[in-house]
Amino acid sequence: MKLAFDIGGTKIVACSRTDDGAALHEIAKCATPQDYSQFLSEIQKIVVQARSLGLVQRIGISLAGVRRGDQIRANNLPFLTGRTVGPDLEKLLACPVIIANDADCFALAEADNLQKNIQAERVLGIILGTGVGAGLVSQGKLQTGPNGTAGEIGQIPLDWHGCTVKNPIYQSAEQILSAKGIEQLFAKYLGEEVSSFLIAEKLADQERDYLAIFKIYCDYLARFLAGAINLWDPSDIIIGGGVSHLPLLTETVEKTISDYVLLPPSQTRLWTARLGADAGKYGALLL
Image: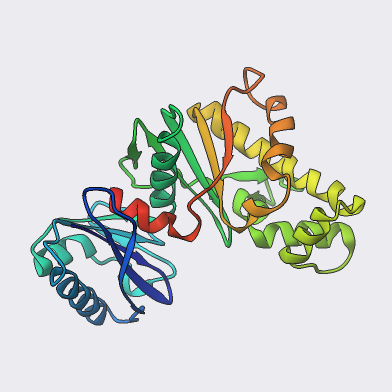
């Protein structure tokens, strides 16, 4: 049995799926400890519980952080930063432990799901949510790189308006394309704060002012994705996260993305993510 952990800032969820491809099965859930020793203890307790159901062959962990070598850097899980989580757990649990960023797990799971229906050789999975994260999958294998940061494109500068040598200020892709970013964009043009939920409602109702501002957002996203296409030339891009549920997002971006790629028209296919909140768990099982 493969065991997967989805570790967030507030909760830990453990689940399994047998080697024959049976459905995802939740084994345990608990609050995320804020102390490293307690964290190791909680993981151990869950693994002991899982072993009562069958042999645990290996463990995959999805967490909101970056792994470089054996060390973790996790802003939302500060007690893990600088720790050698994988080796420590392997020593404690006596089985292989593989750790990946949550966006990497998302990309791996969505690419695997897409591959069941079409040939998708090079997949870029992007999460547009609280932040902007991404993962790269080639031939079914996760690409991480020597720094462990492959796909961390949320920090790429996207808008240099007002940027000078003396005042080198720019807006990153994350600042513009995240849920907070789209709310700020609409607030700028409407003159009042609006929630992403209201934006979704207005777009569904085809309100003209909202559609016009949404077109500006989609143009930013098209430029961003075109840069990724020019750099990595993926066969497919899968967009997930809360922003991906906005009406007409992929359709609008598809209309303009070829304006920004090196060799138009773009042959890269755009998809909306299918696995929802379970993508991280499925991805961890595939590590």
